[in-house]
Image 1: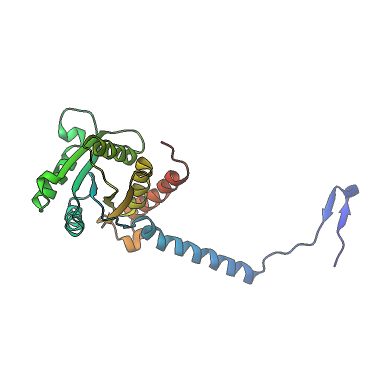
Image 2 (image 1 turned 90 degrees about the vertical axis):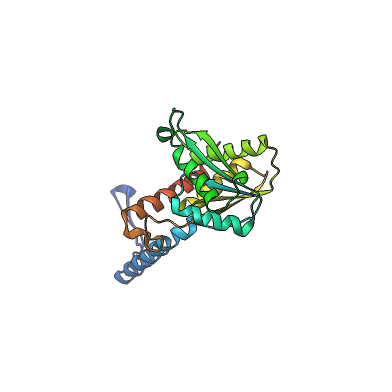
Length: 222
């Protein structure tokens, strides 16, 4: 063992230290690449979860793709939900086009056209806010259930792909321990979910939802 060397009256000291060899650096680099590849491959499945409660209420987010409505109807038929609530945040303006009401109204009509009884389909609107629109939508659903005296123990939220985990978390935060929240992730038609990193749309959507979920998970407060 070599002794430490001092200079300038002890102000400087020279110490023996270990450092990575070329082989060590290569192994470390390979480990980092393997970890990154695992995260990339697993990020979309982590975010786009489907966990059903098959409860009394099916909530459909009012911005989903039109071709996802058929999937929502299949879920309705399989679980026999009592009510289907189409919820959307809209702007407080006169016509349905500028306000954004046309999309949830179209989804409502499509659900009925595809076989859901009209009496069981209800559109719920809340005002657009600058942040946490999904949370505001969840609060609107909670108010509707309270106003209509609907006693539900669980509900499932229909949404798109990588938005699923964040939607479930925000709905659960809105309802607290009142009921259990499940989520149904419909197919995302905008990119290949298996290889989402190969398209700009996939990169924007999945990375944004990943960061947004972390924000809600650790920093969100009502």
